[in-house]
Each structure stands twice: as structure tokens, then as C-alpha cells.
Amino acid sequence: MRSGRWARLAVVTTALLVAPSVSGAVSGTLTAEAEPDQQAKLRKLTQEAAALQKEYRGEILSLEDAKRAVQKASGRVNKLKGDLVAAQRQVAAFAQTSYMSGGADASRLFSLSADPSSLATLAYLGNARTERLNSVKGLVVKQKKAAAAASDEIDKLQAHIKELKSRRGEVERLMAKYGFQTPDAGSGLTQRLVTVRNVIMSQFPMPFSVGCLRAGDPGEHGKGRACDFMMSSGGRMPDAVAKERGDALAQWCIQHASEYGIMYIIWQQRYYDMRTRAGWRMMSDRGGITANHYDHVHVSVL
Image (cartoon, rainbow, N blue to C red; front, side, top):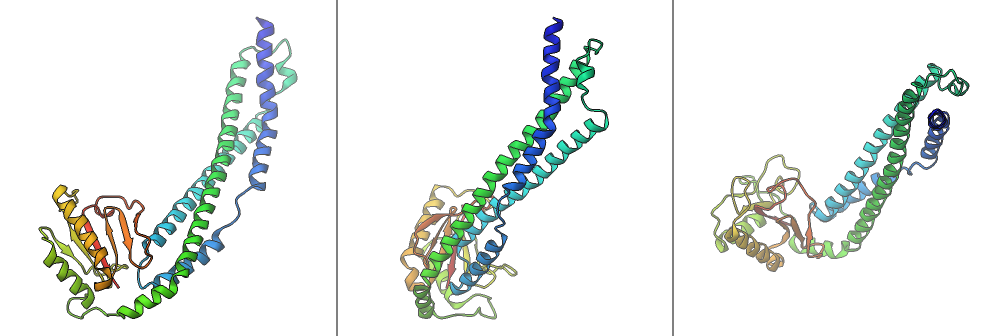
């Protein structure tokens, strides 16, 4: 029994003595392989995206979704960085406390006069240190994966901007065809939007509200170039009849976009942009029924 006890004691002691070097190795690996700074590239892409929105005369939802994906991925990287720094500090504090208290004296531990109850204390210290080191190692792996994911999203944003730039000639011709309208001083809406709203309301029954101008809105509602045609009220999902009406309204907008100068529509977390001609695309999650446009058809005009 005594020999088995000393064997276990030897294993724990060895772990305690070796652990500081492991901690240093983890810290060194992190420093040497930290992800490259993508902030300069992201700032440049953000500026290019803003310029494209102006050229396209309004919000480009596919571009906004790409930017959201980058922001989300970058946010995860920053959070993991913070978690990693905190975990490293815990390991450093643990090592410092162990050193200040005398650490593990191997000669005393293996002497015949050593108190066998020290095994429990050493086991606790060994486990605690191992847990902290494993936590740091795990965070290093997660942080590297998150950095790679953020880099991928930035590359996707760059590719999409390149694609949109390639369509500039086509978009310029589209803008020239419809010209530029300023909102009416009375209603705050452009004449094109008023026309589209009136035609839609003459074609489709609207038992729920229709909202257009939204003062202070940075998007198309604030510019008097968008209306929301509600298919339910109170933030509820539309019933089958209302959903069918919304589907029909969305299809009508697609078919008559060229006739009335419709720019894009959003319906049930999908958008259809007439400028990009990419067809229906899923919109990133905005967080709710109304925010995701499940209860209304959004129509924006040029």
C-alpha cells in the first residue's frame, strides 16, 4: 500500500513541477501564431461598400448581410481574445501563488517522514493547474478557428464587392432610365413611391396597415422611398390567406419592377433586388417576426 501511495505521489509531483514549462509553451505558441490584423482591410472594404451603396442609390441587402457576417465573426474573435487573456492571467496567478508558497519540494515529499495526507493537497493543486492549462489550450484552438472564420467572411465581402462593381455600368443605365426623385414636401414620399403604393392598394386588399415614411430612419423609409404592406397585426405571423396575399404581392412587384421602378422587396426573411438580378436570397436573422419581415412586404423604389 505504501509503495502504491508513493507512486501516485510521484506522478502528481511531477505534474506540478513540469506544469510551469507547459504554461510557458502555451503562451509562446499563442504569441507566435496570433491571427494577422485584418482591420485595415476591413476599413477599406467598408469604405468601398459605402461608395457602392451611393452608386446603387440605396441599401444593398446582400452587402449589408455580408458586413453583418464579418462583424459577427470579428466580435467572436475579440471575445475569445478577452477570454484567453483572462485565462492566461489565472494560470500566471496560480503559478505565482505556488512559487510564493514554496511550491512542491520533491525532496521533502519523497522522504519517509512526509505526511501522506499531502497527497490529497497535491492532487488538488495538480488538477487545478491542469484544468487552467487545458482551458488556455482550448481557447487558443477556438481563437484560431474564429480568426480563420473571420478572415473567410472578409474574403466573401471582398468578392461580393467585386461582383457588385462589375455591374456598375448596368446599374448606371438603370438609374439614368428612372432619374432621381426628391420627396414631396407634404407627404415626404417620392412620386414614384406614391404611384407604386396606390397601384398595389388597388390590386390587393389591405385589411391591415400600410406604413411608408419613417422620420429619422437612415434607410429607404426615411428617404420616402419605401412602404411596408402589413399582412398581420400585433407582431403575429400571418395566417394562410394573408401569407398567400403577401406571396402574390411580392410576385407582382417582381413582374412589374421595370414598369414602376421598384428597387427591391423583402418578404419572410428573403429579399429580391432588381439591381443585382440575383433572385430571391435569404436575409440574415434580424431577431423577430417583424424585423425579419414575416408579417409585412417591404417595397423600395429607385
